[in-house]
Length: 479
Image (cartoon, rainbow, N blue to C red; front, side):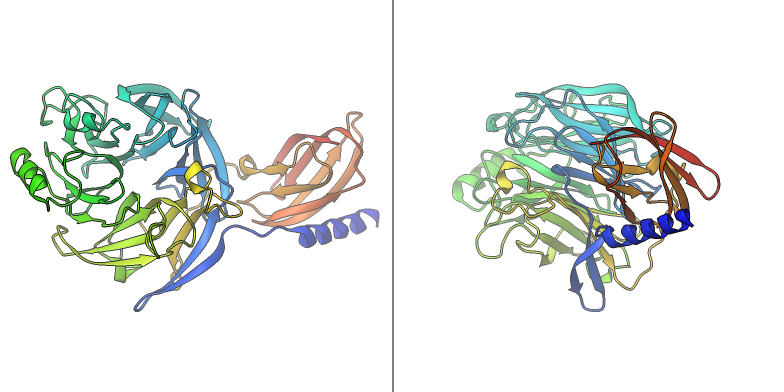
């Protein structure tokens, strides 16, 4: 009778104190024929910079503090994969930036990153993902001699459509003259073989420089047409979207935006400068971008998705822009905008193979002080409200995802088994081997909060047993 009463009490407290669960909806968009739901899938993150999708259902992302993370959007489960120990983060904008997975990941388990490692240096590194131990190993430095700064480091990494090359967008490091020097790597789009070597058909022999004359490119994506698009920050005006071509000069610092003044026309003709696909009159700090061409949102097919950081005048800036392109992808037909000054600074946007869209905020950095919101930074998802998207099954032992906290505990425990549904029996054992607490909870992917008000201070073993007999034990301290 005592155990029945205790179990009933535990389930009551679990239901009473269960916290709001991820994901949760925050907005709805009504397009011509499609209704889109916007929902938060991750919160309280530290300045996520780059988003990448894995075929096994994991959303990977970099954080500016040097941490490589991955998460499951269907339930908000997040785990830290690796912390890059030599990633250097300044007060402003440096740290871990670009992250890309090999196109055949995880069968080819390579992860590529770019980060600053001192005040004035950055590097490009390839790691190997150890799937068994959930960590990165076998560090291989691709490029070590890139000038870095507190900002203007770029960056993004993308693969060529055939998966044989990587392209890396690098900023000028606050030294504009570097962008016009083809012997310098800053202010350039760099091109390497996937193994880190320099391709023989690069435009400047022995150099990874593919294009130059860039200020601070932070968007980079290939379209299905094989066109490489990039977006970059201007100064007070003239953020740009460019079509990147082999060996071309994009003007900075001699030309900003269109070649539309007599001095700029002279320089553009003299140096064969490539004019942008689009030029913002007011700077919006154009950041991460992706190409969208999925029928689940037909209104957005054949378009560029563009995240922006700056607020700008009126309702400009801090929004998601949809650049609808002509069929060849070489002209902007019209622009659609959403979330103006709703979520704050938007750092990256990414489309998944099944047509969903993820984007992340960047409000916890120094430039976000005026727009930071509770539970920032966030990762959000846009999805067709009328479609059932397939959830890719979790591979591995569901007990590996067990989360118990806080530790040390006082008064209550939060228990989460995000990939398990069913009854679990639990017990708490003190150092003498005496069971001081027991009960069971019916898990359904939610966080359960258990009342532990009567547990005295000390070290305990918390044991949980699933209905198939699997057992996990964790050490817990109570204050």
